[in-house]
Image (cartoon, rainbow, N blue to C red; front, side, top):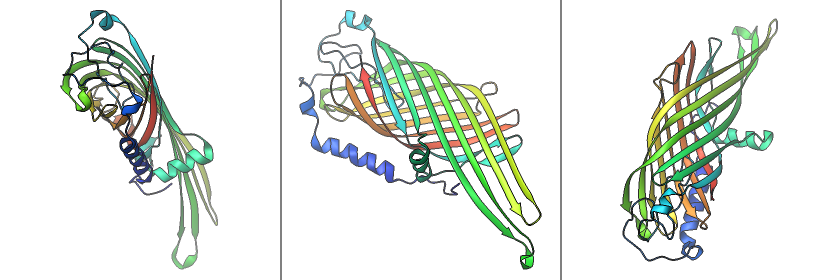
Amino acid sequence: MSTTTTPRLRPALVLVAGAALLVATGCAGTLPTHAAPAAQPAGADAPRARAAVPAPLVAHDESGAAPRDAAADDAWTFSAAPYFWLFAADGDATVHGRTVPVSTNLSDTWDLVKDHIEPSFAGHFEASRGDVSILADANYVHLAGDRDFAFTGPFGRRSFSGRLDVDVQLTFAELGAAVRAAQFAGAGGRTGTVDVLGGARWNSLDVDTDFRVSGRRITIDRDLDGRSDWFDPFVGLRTAVPLGECLDLRLRSDVGGGVGDGSDLAWNVVTGLQWRVSDQVDVFAGYRWYDIDRDAGGRETDLQIAGPGIGAVIRF
């Protein structure tokens, strides 16, 4: 297991460079052109304001130019987004009374993906009607690492060597709602939005450790594993800031916990750029932080995962 706790930035820099390339090459040619109107109320139609763009990276985007259409407000729109995160971890977890360090960097995670084909992935679904959206999101994170150590006593009379292997699987899924709170004029004649979020998030943390020590007269091989499941309510905000005709800055932030045997405090921040490829498809690249601080029934978890991600949004 690496003792480095600061994620390496190379994958994040690649994502930023890719986003810059999209901006440099322009995207207006991929979309129908519209006159740059004043900001319209939520639910504007003809063209229909884009459906709520899913995933923690994203928020609604209103780009309509025509007057409000009550029939369009009553219509449901749907979107789905598969996405992939490359997470690093920093923290520790308590398993059967023993605290286990969980620290990896992005290089460790990438090696895991290459060697074991167990990446972190997620999916998001959203149904919207007017200013209200119902959202569902699921994430699976797999992290692993190892650490070798050795000790030699005075005069070299006794020596020990050992290895600690840690395998962590974190699953979290949320169900919630978003309500339009504000709109503002953005670049390219489009309208930026701010939504208020609320819901509940289920977390499942599975930690498996293998501790081995060998010496001249001693051999220890111990396997410890434990699993915890809990729910956290959360509230937050998300916003879409138009940077051009088809490029948005997306930001979501929420905080939760403080109820029952859930997290004492959990917070989640996602930011990134989203590019509209067509009327039905967007692509995005961004960065995510998810922090959990929990102490319940002798099971302590102090863990932060963070890393870059990419994905696509499909509207239907």
